[in-house]
Structures are given as structure tokens and as C-alpha cells.
Length: 408
Ligand SMILES: CCCCCCCCCCC/C=C/C(=O)SCCNC(=O)CCNC(=O)[C@H](O)C(C)(C)COP(=O)(O)OP(=O)(O)OC[C@H]1O[C@@H](n2cnc3c(N)ncnc32)[C@H](O)[C@@H]1OP(=O)(O)O
Image 1: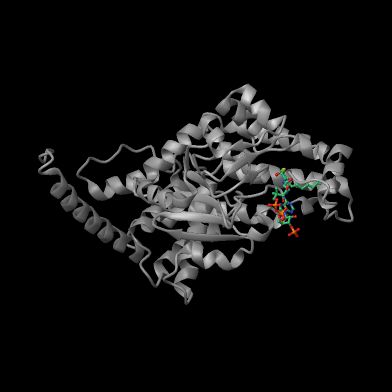
Image 2: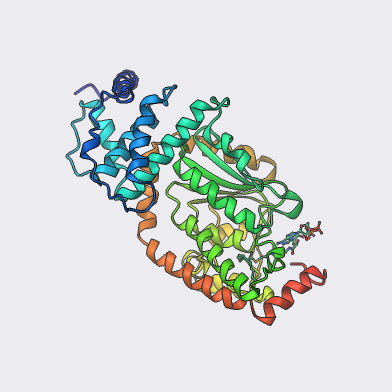
């Protein structure tokens, strides 16, 4: 064994990192050139499975060989892992020895996929290759994936830098109130962030508010099918929206840059870290609006802050200051507004350098303890709200807001 004392350890680590890098680069060159033994005939993926078909998968494998640009070691390891998962299922081979560096890196990438279903792995492989192909075809080759996707979003801004993908709510003139389009775009952005190379994903707001919650104009766009159909579709939207936070696979951080209202507060119970400026407030005025809790808060808030404090917020609509939210455990840390951005991003940049897989797997272990429960709570809350939205209490509250009689 090499010496492990402090005088020798750093040079050893540097040297080993260089060796590992060279070996992986070498393995990856072979993999991309097609000399990696990836026997297409060994595939046993059902043609009728959901998502990408066997043909899509085979096309994607061929596209990998045609890539004009080297996608980098990390991506190549991901491709390898997804390929193995899609064709063989979860990794159950013994871990290669510590000095078998290439096979160890490959094994770790595959093993990190845990029990990801074969169909999902196949779909993720196809999606990953499709992103790589379009990037090597496009003129904006040097831009990261998230930047290239920006054109697809109108209500959020998505950027990736230093291992952090930032999703910024971007309707500052409306206090980042969440329109139906915005719910959809946040879901799409989370989906993209879950698959990109970043280590950490951040949700934040542009302007003086984090978010004023559901945009109340969502209640005014009633389709010809009627208000019941609208309520039904909105309950589905809500359930999917909250579901994408429950299932998000990487560390998720809320950078609460100002006041937060309604659903933007409740889903905080599903984040891994919540950093708040001391200007932030946390307000869930559901009863005032004739509505009931969502975002799994009927379960997470009593767990986080105890039933009495949760009742004060969720039933009686008590607005918390950032300091109070910290004392109740809803917020991880509060920063002075003058240094908020600088301190938070410095902290997150340091965290994003931690081993990516370890962070992700740790998050998933924690979430797996109660994922089913969270989905059940989400379904129940959404279906209760579907009824509430049709109540006269709720309709009166919305009318009061629009007739300027009531502001929170
Ligand atoms: C049939 C069923 C359909 C249902 C569809 C639902 C889909 C899923 C729902 C999930 C459940 C979510 C629940 C919640 O989030 S409850 C919380 C809802 N939020 C509110 O009630 C906040 C309302 N806003 C306010 O009280 C104030 O605007 C606020 C205190 C936030 C800020 O006050 P301030 O005086 O500082 O600023 P302004 O009021 O002048 O705001 C500037 C402009 O922005 C508009 N605005 C702000 N927030 C909202 C909002 N939530 N919805 C709509 N519009 C909002 C405000 O009107 C101003 O607009 P103008 O400049 O045009 O006047």
C-alpha cells in the first residue's frame, strides 16, 4: 500500500487521479470507436415496453459511434452504465479491486443506477445520446445543455455552472406567481436537471420575491368543458408538479431570495437544503383562500416543526419570518440580505465539488424511506383541493383578490 500519512497522501492522490484519468480516457476512446464489447445481439429488451423502443436504443448506440466530438469521460461512463442497466438490469457483479481502475470506474457508474428499471435506463440512454448528437450538430457546441435549452422556457431561466444547475422563476413583475405554463416549465426544467451533469440543482426567484405561489389568474381561464373539468385537470397538474419534487433524484436546494407564499412554501419540505435571506417570509394562507394544504405539507410540516406549529401555519395561515422558519426547522440557514447571494453561492460551489454519486445516493436513501407515503399524501391533498376549488369559499376569496378587496 502507498504511504497514507499527510506528507505523502496529496502527491499520491494527484498522481493516481492522473492515472485514472488517462486510463478512463483510453477506455472511453475504445468505447466510442466501437471497440468496446457492446454486443447488440445480447439485447433482450421488450419491443412493447414503454418509452424508447429497441430500435430507438439501437439507433442511439449507432449515433454514439458517429459523434463528432468526444463527449468527455463522465458522459461516457454514464452511457456505459445506462447501457448495462438497460440490457442486464441492476449491477450485481463483484466490485473490481482497488487497482483495477478502469473496471472499478465502470462498475461504480453502473452500480450508482441502483434499481433503475431497464426501460427507464434505455430511455435515459436514448435521451442522453440525442442531447449529445444535437449538441455536436448545433452551432452552439460550447454551451452547456441547460443553456441550449433556454429557448424552450419562457417563464424560468435555467443555467448550469460549476456543477450547479439553477432554475430561476422569472416573472418578477408578478412576484413570480406560478401560472400553468410555469408549473409545466418547472417540471420540464427539473426533468432536464435530473439528467444533466450537474451535482446540485437550485430553485430560486428573480426580483424581490421568491414566489407569491399559485397565480390566481389560473382560476379565471375556465375552458368550455366547465369548471369541474378545469378543477380535475388542475388537480392532475398539481399532483404531477409535486410528484416531480418527490422523485427528484439529486440534492435540491431552495435559495429563497424573498417572501414565499402558498405552494412555493409547502414544497420546501421536499428540498434537501433551504437557504433564506433574512428578508424572506413564509406564508401559507390556505384557509383565507378557502383552500387546503398541498405540496405534501400536511405530512412534512408536522414532521418538521411538530403538529402545533404546523397547525398555526397550515390551518390558521400564520406568516413566519425567516428567523422563525429557521427555528421551526423549515429553513436550513438564514443569511443577511446584503451578503445572501455571495454567501449562498460560495457555499453551494464548495458542496458541488463533493463526490457526485455519493451525494445523489445519500439523498435517494433518505427519500426512499418515505417516497411511497409522500406520493400517497400528494394524491390525497390534490383530490381534496379538486373539491375545494369548486367551493363558494374558494371562489369568493379569488373574486376578492381580483376586486382588490383582499391582499395577503
Ligand atoms: C378551478 C381551479 C383552478 C385551480 C388552478 C390551480 C393550480 C394548482 C394550484 C396549487 C395550489 C396552490 C396554492 C397557493 O399557492 S395559495 C397562494 C396564492 N397566492 C396568493 O394568494 C398571493 C396573492 N398576491 C398577493 O396577495 C399580493 O400580490 C402579494 C402580497 C404577494 C404582493 O403584494 P404587493 O403589494 O407587494 O405586490 P402586488 O400585489 O402589487 O403584485 C404585483 C403584481 O403581481 C400580481 N400578483 C402577485 N401575486 C399574484 C398571484 N399569486 N396571482 C396573481 N397575480 C399576482 C399582482 O396582482 C400585481 O399585478 P398588477 O401589477 O397587474 O396589478
